[in-house]
Amino acid sequence: MLVALAGGVGAAKLLRGLVEEIPSDTLTIISNTGDDIELYGLSISPDIDIVAYTLSGLVDEERGWGLRGDTFDCLSMLRRYGAAAWFNLGDRDLGTHILRTQRRRLGQTLTDITAAFCQALGVQARILPMCDQPVPSLIRTPAGLFHFQEYLVQRGAQEEVIEVIYQNIAQACPAPGVCEALATADAILLCPSNPVISIGTILAVPGVRQAITASPAPVVAVSPIIQGATLKGPADKMLRGLGFEVSAYGVAQYYDGLLDGLVIDTLDAALQPRLAQLGLHVAVTNTIMHTLADKQALAQTMLALARKCHA
Image (cartoon, rainbow, N blue to C red; front, side):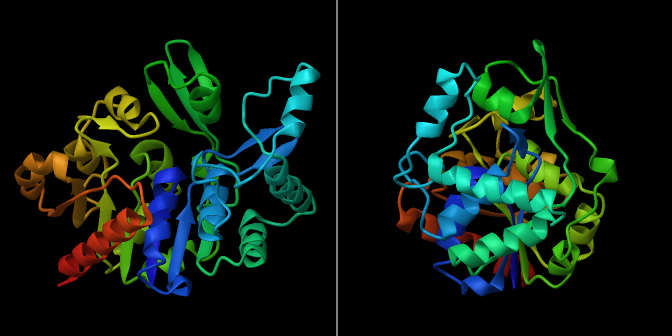
């Protein structure tokens, strides 16, 4: 059994390659929910949905988010009414959010709702939210304090990051099955997601980091930073704002002794000796995933590194 900590597009791409290499039903994915937001009265879970849509074959790969072939007529109507329709929600995508909202109002947990949606979509991997409680991630910038989605989508992640706040995280607890999956995992994989706002939120849920540390499974990550920058998203701004070097080395430092192995891009091969000094096994390969073959190759490298760490 493999367990992957995941958030966003980079994670979805890697997981798409991973399910080509292992049986899907042997994979448990623990998803970030700090990005979750309520808009127009609807409960939206972007990171859960991008993974579910990707593994079900429904994702719009050209955009990198949403459903393939979706339309945006509802959003157009909202704009006509003068609504601040800055968050792109497709018409078919809205069906997911409407039903999730209805079921949450009926008292169902996000864990149970996600399991039902995955079954309906034909997703064989198990997707677990990191917790069932709302824990929005807030970003403090020189311009003020914003929900992560406001900072990223509405404001274009333009401002420097002063602080990242996992609101209400101390009152959260791991969703059912999360700690059990970590305890029995053969390997724990940290996807190439934003370390601070995707993986960091999961690790901040009380009990999760402890469960990973206590697990005998090797812990392997892929650095989302290549040559001092990200391919997508504000991970570089966040690492810099929190005082970390913006590099694969900074990613390893952020994870603070949690890792046994780290996969870095060939463009960062020169960092391998420094990373080895941290006691890490390092694999150097292409980490940019344009094609399915790229995704599979990165998944193969990650699995091989996990085996090496376990030896």
